[in-house]
Structures are given as C-alpha cells and as structure tokens.
Image 1 (tube, rainbow, N blue to C red):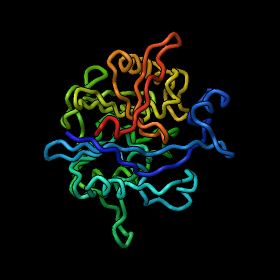
Image 2: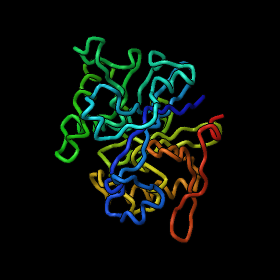
Image 3: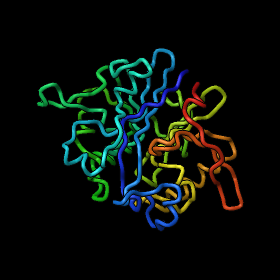
Image 4: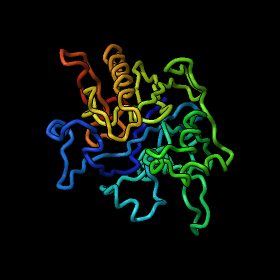
Length: 286
C-alpha cells in the first residue's frame, strides 16, 4: 500500500464560524485571521494505492460553480486536484474508487463536472465508483434547513444517476471494521449525520483521515467546535472519545482542512488531550 496527499485547493472561512462559541482571543492563537476575520483552510485529500485499486478520499469543491460562489470562499494558492495527482504520477481516469466522508460541497464538489460544452453534468472520475452510506445519502438528498446550502444537488444526484454509487455497510456501534475498501470507518454524527472517518492501517501505523471531526489542530480542545455542526454537544462527545483513543493508541491524524499542519499526534495532559507532534506527509508516507 502507498499513500499520497492530494491538495484539491485552498480557501478561507470565517474564523468565528469555524470555532463556534470560542472567543477569537483563544482560537486566533492557533488559527490567525486576516483583516476580514478569515482563516486559511485547505482541501487536503488522500489517495490510497492498494493493489489494483486507487482510492481517493474526498475531492474538494471542484470547479463547476460560479465565480460568485467561489468568491465567498476566497480561493488562494495554485494547488489543484489535477496538479496534485500528476505530481504523484496519476490522473483522474486512474481512480477506481472515490470515498466521500460526507456530502458537503467542500468534500464532494470535485466528484461531478460539466461536459465540454457545459450542457450536462457527468462524473469527473469516469472509471470510479462513488462511496457513501445509506443514512447519510438520505440525510443529504432530503436536507434540513440548516445544511441545505452545503448539500448541492448538482454535486450529489449525478453520482446516483451514473449508476456507480455504492454504500458502505453501517456498523452496530461506532466503528465498521475492515470495510469493502480495506480500511476501518468511524462513524460520527455531530457535524452531520453518519460522517465517515477512515482509519487506514499502514506500515504499523493507524492513519486517521479526520475530515470535519477535527478540521485543524486548533480544534483539539473539546469546546472548540465549529458553528457549522448540527449537533455540537454530540461532536464534543465524539471528539473526546476519538482523541482519547488516538492518544492511547498513537494514531496519526491526517488533517483535511488545516492549511499549515498536515499530520499530528496527540497526548494526554493535565488539561486533557493536547497536541503532541506535527509531521509532514513526507515524514510518514515516505
């Protein structure tokens, strides 16, 4: 098995929204804001090369939305999914499976693109299956009023229409061991219903793709929960459980949205679980 980080683009969001009720004087220590109160974020995806399968976990916002839409998210830098795939010797047509932690636009928007004359929507990965789970799919296709702006039908419905949508099994507890894709999945419901956190066993390490359970290293303290979460008290419980497991078992936490910290470990302290070490992907994957 080989692992490759794939940067699908960088953007900014309001720091207050990213940290909910936590005062700026606290969250700005780890995630400094610009003059508009926006903080740096990224869409750091993960590519798994395992035998004859090439599995992409999440794929960023894509590029099919309007300039007005992207203007709300202040894109920066020149990273793209295609450039990142090419850097590692791959292209979109090589992907066999696209695993989506959840269906918010910044995680799945790259799944679907317009055709050449922009008249039809089509899969951006023509040889891949798309993976979600039944509960989250229902949640996303019949969205509540709070999340409706994050579940864009043009990102979601064409996956099903393509005939290449697949669902993982749902566990009896929180964790599905050894899914159809060869890794474990932790299911979390605080951010959105049945978000999936892949746990990949790699060279004696457990690499956890944290998605929106832990967006950045600055979100480690338990009350530091995004304003976007639908059930913030449940997020706190889920995060406490997972971070304790991570500290006990020395998990390596792959941060999807942290523009400046790629992989971290955590440790127990008198103040609770806190940051231990910071690694680059090259440190761990090479």
